Image 1 (cartoon, one colour):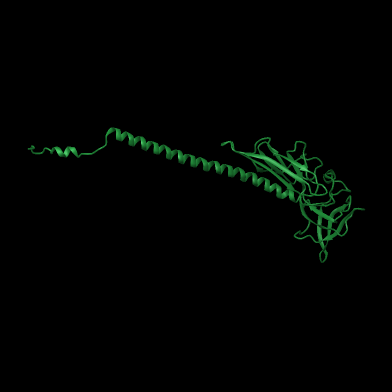
Image 2 (tube, helix red, strand yellow):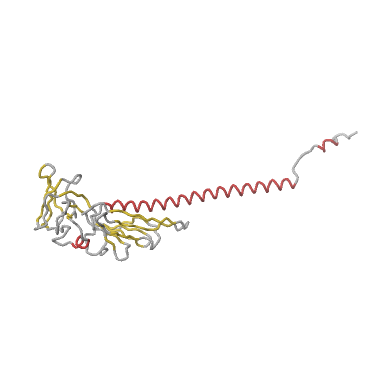
Length: 272
């Protein structure tokens, strides 16, 4: 018989619980799962950050190359030139273009007639006329006679129908007549330069005989460029194609060490 309050022997046989070994095993397994989860989340986050960094670098490179490409495609023929190091590129942008009926290339005159220019309202400040620009040196020489007028466009008047008259601020004589009777309205030259870790754009500094003589209105187009990696190359026009400009640079991220190489060719669409 059992004394009052004492448990029967069978009650001790069916009691359950954790042993010390089982508890240690549970803790070890939980620790392993926790470490694996942390590593998975860390690797996922790191992969996302790396992908975002690469995407940002690719976007920076694309924006810079696309902006420069769009401008170069409409550059005045034979106006693209480089400095001695190949890190600076200059060109004259075209504002408008059309065909002329007559142009002063035998004697100087302050006006000529041509075909109406679609979307062009008239002479802006520092806009000049170019006819048959086949010599880069003559384009920037600012001489009279010359392929690019020293005088600016004063006004554009309608004669009748699609015929217009372009009036210059002073008389100018062009060096030659274009085989296609084509003339261009040009703006002030634009220069792009790789300097240090940045690509700069300069504008509204006037026409200069030497590239980079006095650059004004500096704009940063893109930074985070690997120093010394940027440059330009120009392949002159031939009888079968227009001139081709190659630009190359490397965008880098100092934090991750990642880099993105940009190498693009642009063809100038305009012809003399």
